[in-house]
Structures are given as C-alpha cells and as structure tokens.
Image (tube, rainbow over all chains, first blue to last red; front, side):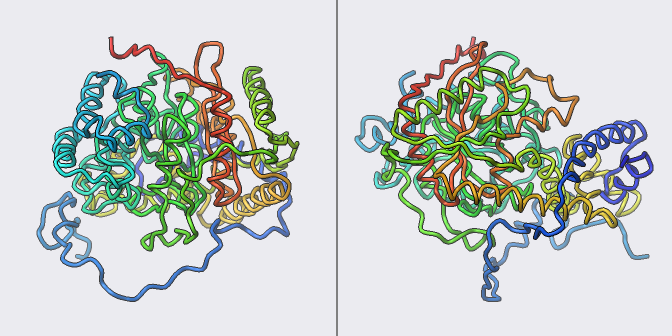
Length: 95
Length: 485
C-alpha cells in the first residue's frame, strides 16, 4: 500500500503539525519507505494470537482518592508561555 | 589530579569512605575536565556551581553510610530535575523547568549523589546517533567525527570521556546499550517495571526503562541497586524483592546455560562481529558455562513491530505538547492554528516523522492492520523468549550489527538508521533485562559490545555473567583526548 500526498496532509492535520509542500513530499517518500519495510509483518498469520497490550501483567493498583500535592498552582503556571497568575491563556475559543 | 577522573565509581566511593579524598576534590576535577571538553557537546545544562556548593556541604558533614556519598553525577536530560531545566533535547521544552523530581534521580540524591548537569540526547530519545537533538549533535570521544550512538549519546560520550564517573540513560529500543557498545562502556536496561518511569519525559510508555551506564560491571551493579525501586507514582512499577545487586555480585557462573540465537547471525554482518561473538562463547566456556544453540524465530519481525508500537505510543504521549502548558508557543490565528504552528516549529524532523507514523497506524481504518497486528507479533516475539528461557539461563548476542558510524552517514535514510537497533529492540518488546559490555575493537580501533539478555527480573544473573566475562575480556578503553587538544 502506498501513502499519497493527500494522505500525508491528512495525517499532518490529525497530528496537529502544519507542513509545507516541500516537507510533505519528503515525508511522502520517507513514510513509504518505512511502511514498505513494516509490511513484512503481513507474512505472518496472527489470526489466533492474543495481542500483547502490557508487558507487566499486573492489574492496576487502586489508590485513595485524595489530594497529595497542595498549593502547586503557581509552580505549574510558571512554565506557561502566556503569563497569567491564575489560568492558562489560549486564543479565544468561544465567540 | 588526573588520577581522580581515572577511578571507577566504586573506587571513588571507597576513597570517600576511607576519607582519602573529598567530595569537593572529585567534583572540582570533573567540572574542570567537563569545561575543557565542550567540543563533545555532551552537556545541555551545567549545574557546576550548585554541584560545588553541594559537595562542600557534603564534606562539612559527610554521611558515609550512603551508597553514593558525595559523588557527582551528570544525567540524561530526559529526567525531570526540580528547578533545573529539562529539555529532552527538544526546542518545544527549551525553557521547561520542572517543579518536581523524577523518582530515579531522587533515588540518586537520596543515596548522596550530587547533580553535575544534564546531558544531551536525541530529541525525545528518538534516534540512534544523537544527531536529532535541538542542541546539536554529540561527538564520540573515541574518534573525531564519530557518533556516540543514541539516544543516550551525551551520557555515553560524557562517561567514556570521563566527564562524569557514571551516568543514567533511558532505553526504549536500545538507547542505553547501543551507545554503551559504541563507546566501550557498560550499559544495562532493566526489566520493564524495575525502575520507575515517574518524571522521565515519556516516549513509548510500554517500552521505556531507565538504566545505569558505567565504566565497569561492578559500578553498574552499584548504580542499579540505587535506582531500582518500587514506586506508587508509576502505575506499571513492579513490587518485587530487589536483590543487593552490588554485594551479591559474583563470578560463579559454573553450569549456567547460555543460549546463542541463530537468527541474530544477520545478513551482511561484519566478520569482526562474528569473531567477537565467537570469542564471547569461548570466554563463557572458560568460565564454566555451557553454550546451547537456540532459535528466536520471530527476530526479523521485531524492528517493524517496534516501528509501529513505539511511534503509536509516542504520538499519544507527545500530544501534550500543545503550546499551552509549557515553554514554547507560536501564536496563531486561532487555537488550532496555534497548535499546528507550535508543533511544526517546536518538534524536529525525526520526532514529526514518528508522530505521523503513530497517528497513521492508530487512525480510523488502519488500527487493525497495523497497531493490532504489531501487538500480536509482539506477543509472538515474547513467546520466543519465554520458550528459550525454558532451556537457558541467559542469551548472548552482539549488541549492534556494526561499530560506530560517522556523523551524517545515516541521517538521510531512516530505515538504515533504524536497523542499528536490530539486536536491542526485541529485548524491549519482551520487557527483558539486557546488558551491553565492551568486548573488543574493530579494525579502526572502535569499540564493539556483546549483549547478555536475561529472564525477567534476573538482572543479577546477567550482571554475574557480565562480571565473569569482563575479567576474561580485559577490555581497556583508550581515548586520545582528541577533543582536548
């Protein structure tokens, strides 16, 4: 199966990564060579194989529903690119 | 004092305990050498001033019961360090200062170690040559213009160049073992679930593991003992009784059965690697181990499987970099435009490529054909190992299919770059422990490594085998200090 330019642009949209035409063409070439190589997996019949979803076969642990980190708002907001003491700031979303 | 930098981690600990040298002596020696080794580009962030303050503090009131008393250590810049910039080698995190500490680095500081600085790595640990870092590529101390391997390339280079007595890396598909092999050092990837992933910038969560990188096997056992711990903050951390890897280290491997997988004899493998592997078998026989031929029939499917699973997980993990919560943002006409511009300019080419592979294999209509298929093949790969370990105690393979390559040699061909990890990736897919030890030199005098793969949680087993082999191999790392002239 080949990945065409239209698909590359669709994936870039899904990935929320803008790409120009030149980059898209390069990606088309790279992705096709990678997927051609990946398709080796189709040689294998895996009809009766259980997928491996986690290597550590443990059931997730429950913990008490309690707050362990307190008063960290300032610390967390320190790394935000738009400065505001109380909130993360984003472009207007609701008209 | 050139002597100090030539001592192993274990020797340093002993000399501090016997009060022959001080933490300040050690720290200032490493700082001085690191400052004159900038050409290697190993550090992204230097914390030398704080390190000196901390070493003086230690010397004023030394706690000699600690496992790493007053020992300065530089770590891969993938570990979040509280109030110290943590970039993961990416522009998108170029100004990120964590407000918390990773569990593995916290374990280091709890044991008395002192942070020297943060070491360069491939962007988000995606790469095998440390050429994808936003902060420039790292050079190997082995030779001018040679890559140190990746993604823990800054760690491997700093360790081999003696800019830190030991270090920690992370390994998702070989990122500790491959650079260790390229630089003549020891690197261990523990069993999945041994070391906490809390506070490590996530790449592929079902594969990522932290691990020690050291000058010899003894140091490796000591550092593993410090960093391996059960952690409630990591939902896949495993609560098992961890041995005292360091004090339990021994060379009694008589009667151990070591498997040699025929599928690792890959096409086009250089004769010198075959020879290295054969020598490894001889060393093991001389130590009283038994060599057994085994088969891991799905080996050739490991890399394609990895290049579905790892990018899929990466595309999910890296969705958090949206220009809202962390450092880098490019303003846009609206929210979506801001996301797209931020991620386009904030990520490098290799990271974007992998996010897009991952997005594609998880997208509607392709999930079953790619992601589910890969998870099934991953199961077959794990079954191969389970079956092999019914017959053997450990498996011996080369660490890499070749020695280190030149800067720029593989950057235009992603698949040829990915093939570097052919012997290391299956170990991550199966969640097993693996160690690479230096085992010889190629015709250019570049180091070559051998890998030992163990049963789950049998780090001690492979450390003991590596310890026995190390004595027989008697490898000496000689760098010419070419960068220091």
